Image (cartoon, rainbow, N blue to C red; front, side):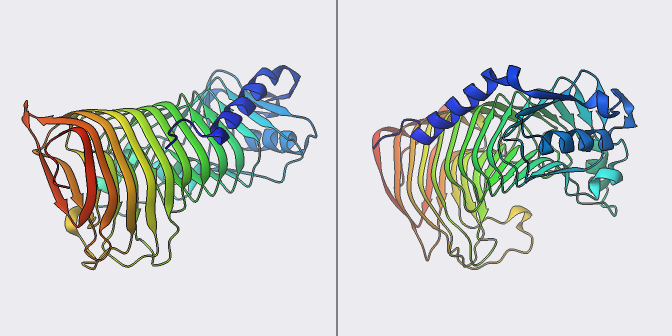
Length: 393
C-alpha cells in the first residue's frame, strides 16, 4: 500500500509555490487607501469590504495588503463570483474583534469566505477577544453562542499560510464544503479551558492539507467531520486540547462518510486524547474507512488511542442506542510515548457494527513508567511487530 503523499497534494503545493512567486505581477489594493485605520479603535469593516470589492471585480490577479497595526473589525462576509482569478490577503497587522463580546457573538463568523476560488491568506494575526464570552458561559448567563474566527464555505483552491489565530469565541478555522485547501505554518493559541474552541475543523471537503501547524486550544486541535476525504495532516503539534478527532459522527441519520485520512508526524502534549474516532450511539448511514495514523509522539496524554462509539460528553442527554457508523481499515503505526491513564488503547465499538480491519503496528505506550493496558469491545483486527501495551485484538 502506498502511503506517500498523494499526487493531488503535490500538484496543489506546486500551484501555491507558483502563486507565491508571481505576487510581483499582482494588482495591489492597500486597505489604508479605502479608509482603514491601524489604531485598533476605529471600525475598519467598511474599508476591508470595499477593498475586497475592488479586488473581486478586477480582471487581474490581485493582492489586498494590510500593513502593520491593529484593525478593529466586525463580522465580514467575502462573497465569491469574482472576476479576479487570484486574490491574496497579505496581512502584516492584527485584525481584532470588538471588546464587547456581544457585538461579534451574535454573528456566525468574524471573517467568512463563501463560494470563492483562488483566495490566499498570508501572514498576520486574528484576535477574536474570546475570554469575556467564555466567562459569560461559565457563569451560566444568557450568552450568545459565539462566532468562528475564519471560515471558508463552498470554495476551491484556498491557502492559509503563517497565520496566527488568538482567542476565538468558538472554532478558529472552519473548512466546509471546500476542495483543494492548503493550511501551512498556522499557529492557534487559546486557553486549555476555553469551550468549543476547535483549532481547525474540516467537513464535507476533499483534498485538504494541514502541514506544520501548532495548535493550543480548549477542544479538538483538529476535528474531522462527515464528508471529509483525502485529508493529509503532517507535522502538527497539539496541546493543550482534546487531540485530533474524527467526529463526532452519527449526529444525523443520513450522514456522509469519512475516508482516506492520513495523520503523521504529530506530537501531543498533555492532551485529553491523542488519535480519536468518536460517534454518538444512534443510527446513521455514515462510515469511517481508510485511516492512517502514523509516527505520533504522546507526552502525558489521557487517551492516546481511542475509538468511542458511545460518545456522550458529560453523560447528558445520551441517546443510549447503538451507533450505526461503520468503522473499518484503520491503521495505527509508530505510536509511542506516555499515557496519563492506565488504559492507553481503548476500542469501544458498536455492538451492531463492530470495528473491523483495525491494525496496530510498532506501538510503544507506557503509563507511569509501567506497562499500560488495552481495552477492546466489539472490534476485530491484528497486530504486527512490537505492540505495547499488550493488544486485546
